[in-house]
Image (tube, rainbow, N blue to C red):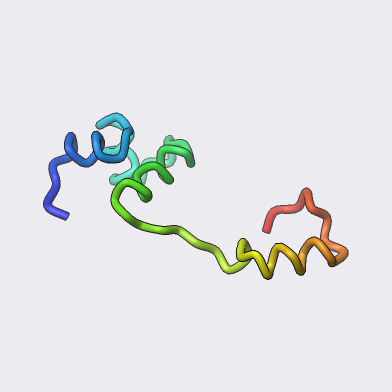
Amino acid sequence: MGMKLADCAALCNVGINTLSRIENGNNNCTLAATFAVLNGIGIKLTSPSLTPDSIEKRNHSNVNNDEWV
């Protein structure tokens, strides 16, 4: 994107070190920080299993609601 690390971190409301870890694929980052960065740079992360239709189907099936999708 041609943006300096400090500017991008400020835009995403995360620290420079956190942004650097995410950028370099370090697994020592929180999901909240990752989503903050995605949101800050305009990337919408979606999952077909989390659409309203799929959730409704799951609620009416025999799937335990405590299970991961």
